[in-house]
Amino acid sequence: MPLRAKVATSVSKTAAALSRAAGRGDGSVIGGWIGLKIDPDLLRNLAAGRAIALVSGTNGKTTTTRLAAAALGVLGPVATNSFGANMPTGHTSALAKAGSTPFAVLEVDEHYLARVIDETNPRVVALLNLSRDQLDRAKEVAMMAQMWRTALAGHPDISVVANADDPMVVWAARGSSHITWFSAGQRWTDDSWVCPESGDPIERANGDWWCTGCSLRRPQAQWRVEDDGVIDPRGDWHLVKLQLPGTVNLGNAATALAVAAEFGVRPIEALPRLSTVASIAGRYAQVDRDGRNIRLLLAKNPASWLEAFDMAEQAPTLLSINARDPDGFDTSWLYDVDFSPLHDRPVLITGERAFDLAVRLEVNGIPFRHVLSFDEVVRSVPPGRLEVIANYTAFQDIRAELDRVN
Image 1 (cartoon, one colour):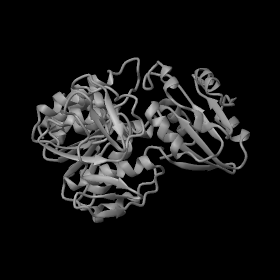
Image 2 (cartoon, helix red, strand yellow):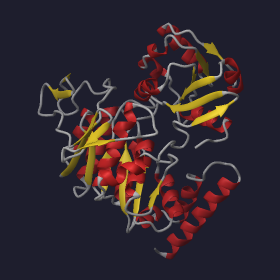
Image 3 (cartoon, one colour):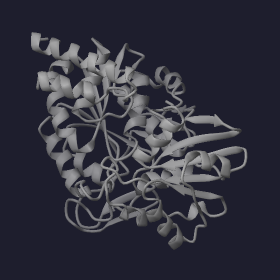
Image 4 (cartoon, one colour):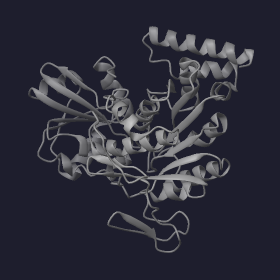
């Protein structure tokens, strides 16, 4: 690397280490921010010479990135932003911290995908899904799909691994020359009833979908979730054993296997590594406190709340909502969430916007109790399982309360 990039890398690593030592976080953002101030081309310089996969989408990025990095580890050391810092500062910090590795798997915020493609020249880009998120500042879903489509059109040599079940993703990806499709089912469909190509309605039946006014339709998937396993492009079925809960994570595992396969990793080699992943930056972590087994589930938009309810056991459940900058200030998305799965269990609510949540639960007819602290939550439920579902900053608050579990 150029001398300036070497200096920036050293300063970046030092700043990140100081942040961790001071208890101010893992340093994933500040290290990259300082490094890029010294050398604006630092991300490009750090990416040079590495075989890189980028993972983007509204939901599942962090988990799929962690699983893909584990799978790719079959081939050698892998740099990755495993704590979810998914903008260029986080990518820069992750690559600087990792040193010289042959591979990298990076989670990318969907808004930054075009820029990160330009600066890292990835071998593979995985596109997971697109749905509404952070309504006060994020682009409308079809606009995001157009941004992805334009970005990929400028890099025809990239191998794309894309979700065949999401019409927005299919439309964004289908102009690419090398596409591998995966299918894991799509539970949330409320953001893809209208075709982004023609504006006509999209029809669905028996797992298939098609536009009623143009040629856009669900492609045949090479990687498919079936029962408790994944079918690969050869038609072989592989049992997938994960420590992570829920059907959605079986789909994330299928995506990770498809990404690793683009680097020549066979499923039989990757699967044992996927089974070692137990928690991702606190997501799915289980902590025992005062006789309660507390499980943490992150849910930040309607689609991810739907999946969280699917994972949660029939046990006392704490819901926590904030509306800080990383969450988005608009909580109207709560009315797109169906809270009816919470009937017949004790429900507690907390967080800075707990009253917004209270009104929403009243509409759904869900009884609840408002609590002011996490200690009060623990005292309010009997020994046993406690499910915690929280949006982003509320999740981080609870994670800190439990000593920043990973």
